[in-house]
Image (cartoon, rainbow, N blue to C red; front, side, top):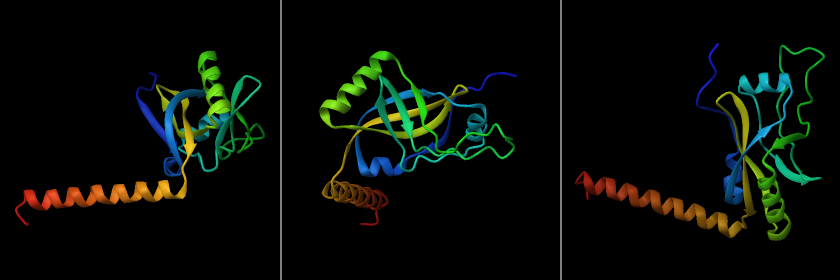
Length: 158
């Protein structure tokens, strides 16, 4: 059977982009068990409340929910277990330095399959204040109004 090509998104964390300002993104592999991979291939995962932390020179993903595989037996996995992220040593050192010094956090943005391998996109993020969120909403609404006005004008309605 030929290997999969391309990128198939399983889950994305849309709330993260609302609650945080994403400064940089990294792609990491995940150390998973067999039933976790099968459950992900079925398109079942949730990144709500998930976060990543550096512990003992390794990066771990906490609170990501991958439901048990329905056809699994007693070998099924624990849905919210801590999962190890696979990154290069230099990337781990860079991330841990920024988290420690700058007060940033690591938030998972997407879980996907890239050429058959399960990957997670980690965002290096700074939390937004309420006024930042309101500012972003106002900016998006203004851009929408401008595009509507330009569309009406190009059709000769104004």
